[in-house]
Length: 109
Image 1 (tube, rainbow, N blue to C red):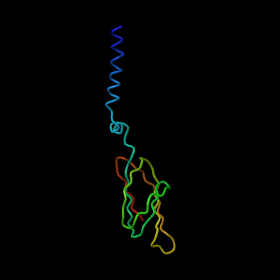
Image 2 (tube, rainbow, N blue to C red):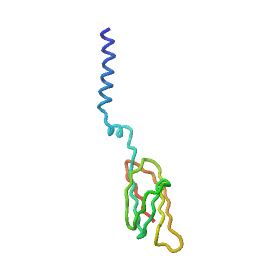
Image 3 (cartoon, helix red, strand yellow):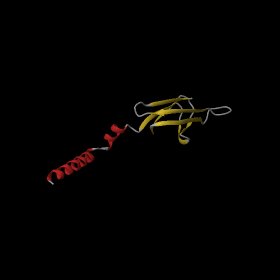
Image 4 (cartoon, rainbow, N blue to C red):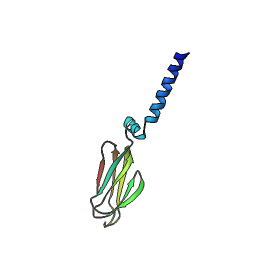
């Protein structure tokens, strides 16, 4: 009876100790990270509206840049010129894979 009690208590104590010793950061190390960054660089003097995955994010002024944290994976990006054009605005589309191991960059137009 005593031997079976020891075999039951030891795994329970070990499990409780391991459960409470883990922090959220250690899970990222084991499972891999889930977010990465991208820097958007406007090389024009004119402002551009920025869309990520079809959603409006911001208007990025001329010769400005911004950094965004996104979930890891493929994302679509669109930049649409807001002023400084004669007949029609410049619209630039791209798709980028965001990875937690390497920051991405998109320079437009």
